[in-house]
Image (cartoon, rainbow, N blue to C red; front, top):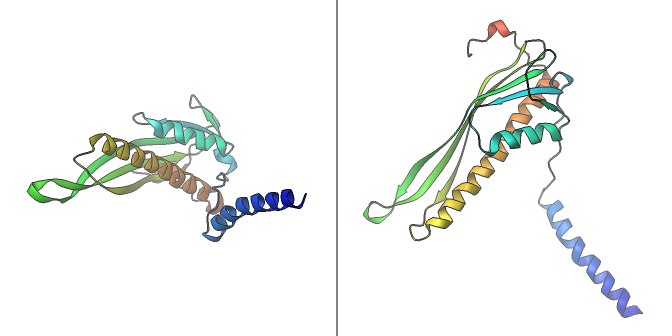
Length: 182
């Protein structure tokens, strides 16, 4: 009987160690963004396709927002006219071989409240990640770029949600007539 108790205690300790390690390093699960009441119904317009619009829509819904199919009265408008990836070479190896790249991601967005008030003027967010290129593993490079783009999409969605959340905390509304960025 004591052998079984010792085994269970050992299993419990094995499960507890990784959780303590995560807590010690500062890891915390992301919480949903607390968006203001004026943004509880949003019509989302995103230029282009890909996974970014789906990820942004899903994150808004997870935060308690109803993403509307059409704009209308009482519905805020989140416009993303630019969401574009780019790639630059960083370093060259021997015989003019490129060995490092940088993936850039630029997103621009603005938010208009349900009453037509410009809540967030046109914002420009730029993010990038660098990676090493292996000329002998082109399949691995393509999957590496896809993973970097997925990570940038995820980070970009979080950056937008943080700015939307700031509207509720700090009241950053700007009169629509003061905007010259449209």
